Length: 314
Image (cartoon, rainbow, N blue to C red; front, side):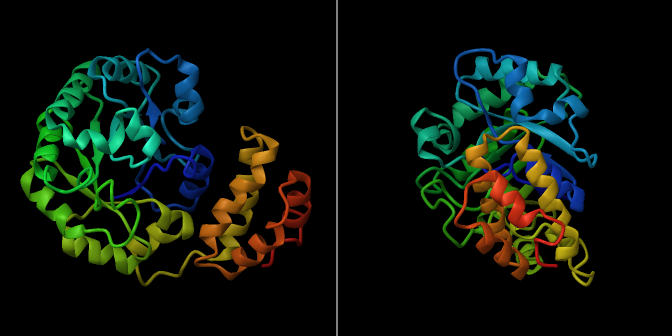
């Protein structure tokens, strides 16, 4: 099983749509929905996860799970019930976000220092969500260190999570290589629920090493999939032909059309550059496209330069 990771500010519904059109992805998780002290209206859930209006699936038919982030068990439970009623495929709980702003407000990876609270959050959400819907969670190896790694994972599992994604770094380690896949294996051996490995998977070879070191068959991939939209297929069939630029080029245009519907004009070029910046790790044509629009933030100019019939190098 290959899951597409949620990435705040990068991997939103528009990019989920594009990447799942390429294929090879079994399930997605939406960017976290921040829960504080109130029941959010339906429009907030629909804004972050428009797939709720399509049976909790992308246009390509890939399931999307709603992810909630917060620290109040009762409020998280109420909002989990709300998103379930709106048609979510399931509820995922974020115990892994390393962002300072989130952590300062007692959300994400800092909660890994409080295993009892992790248990209470998962248990409250599990009680609030209909029994047929899955409740899962994502964690890191810890907050500042790994000292509570096993205890935190066991608290999440005993609270009722049916599945646990583990990012192989602490909050303090951020996204600095390497990811410690062997530690994920320690967690896998300590809990009775399926564990999915995540972190620093950029190639099919990385995926195989991750599986070997963690013992996990299932993987969650984020930046690696954004940089190489064909990565899921490469992991599934390493000898199969790579997904080339001929497939990706029209998807750039589709992505541009999608973000025009919900991103302010002054930010649209930045969103496209963000994706091209990762794509150019694998594709020379993406480097050319990135350099072509690097100096402009004018949507009309970007459209003229890249999306005229012969603009993007073939």
